[in-house]
Image (tube, rainbow, N blue to C red; front, side):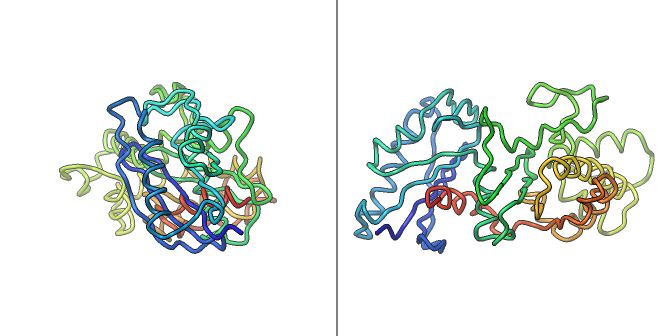
Amino acid sequence: MAKYGYGVDIGGTTAKIGLFTVEGKLLDKWEIKTGITDGGERIMGRIAWSIREDMSSRDISEDMVAGIGVGVPGPVRDGGVVSCVNLNWVDFPVVSTLSWLTGLKVLCANDANVAALGESWQGSGKGILNMVMVTLGTGVGGGVIINGHIHNGVHGAGGELGHITVNPSETKRCNCGNFGCLEQYASATGNVYIAEKVMAELDTPSPLRSAEKINSKLCWDLAIQGDPLAVEITNRFSNYLGMGLATIAAIIDPEMIVLGGGVSRTGEPLRQWVEKYFKKYAFPACKDIPITIASLGNDAGMYGCVKMVLD
């Protein structure tokens, strides 16, 4: 009977690997460099070698491993990555390649999707079978969990919550090529974009004007302190995010919405600010959906990868 599972969360710089029990306990975790200078061709080999080395050092046989779950920063379809710019992958067969290299069962999904699954399994949404997670980082990602399982969508784009249109009047293109996506405002970079626009529109004095570099954390720190300019920036950020969450809620009607990613480290002030605007826009039956902050941090993806294999 299988006792263990491996979760692999692949990023552009490193791959985080975790060894778990099938009950969901994280036993150990480590990172290896992905290395994409060769077109990403050796990434799977590095991961396979690292896992096989770990199995050997712990005297873990193949029949003791339920499998390997892999999270990748791109849409996934039929066990492969459709496109992953950060890894130089296009139509790359993740599942068949890693399975051949390790001899183990392998499953693959989008990294934000598995993070959502991880939070619903052992994180803030533990015990919640219908949940939405929105990750607020350099961009805005997300995952939709329905009846305890990831909703991948027909084209592998399920959970691309950052590309809901919240401002059709926007003239600047999003990275996806469209205009006015949630990602353009509710990400860490979007927070700075809003700050630059507000500072150009208003002459309100603020420490932001003399800051060497403006970032999302500085905007939130000053807003919490009551700085008027930062409060205006944060209101606009939260308005867009609240609007986006209300749209998601009207479609999914989840039991809970979880906020993750770097911006979510702001914690309770972020949750309260966003909740105010969510309630403003939400369909009446959805207004009381709880919004909470993710608890697993950067490990959420690894947890979700293992849960995916166990399911």
